[in-house]
Length: 124
Image (cartoon, rainbow, N blue to C red; front, top):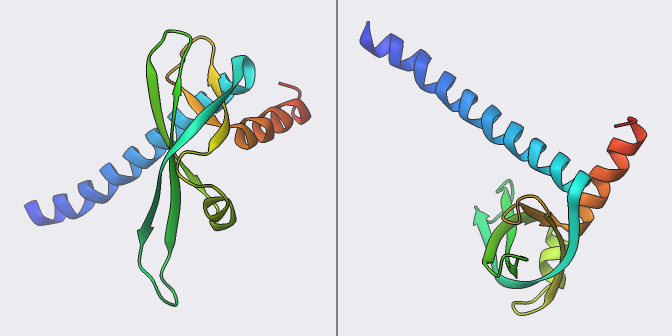
């Protein structure tokens, strides 16, 4: 009986966790679209996760750093496509937006601009 309950609860907990993360990021992107300030970050690291070879899904991320108006250095990791990952090097300038109301929230400029366009089309 306990094993059946666990078999049901564990996947449910994972789904709830994923929904929470996606919802949080959606709210952050909406905030950035509303009050984001353009800034230049520095690429601090390039990361690849996943398997290699055919059928292996590899996730490319960059980690960037920027100093907010509060003087605090903030760090963020973002998933990027392989062409963008190949185009940037550690130490490169990287265009971002950070939230005026909460400088620790940031995203690559291209994502914020896409979000702004989508929200404008929806009239929000």
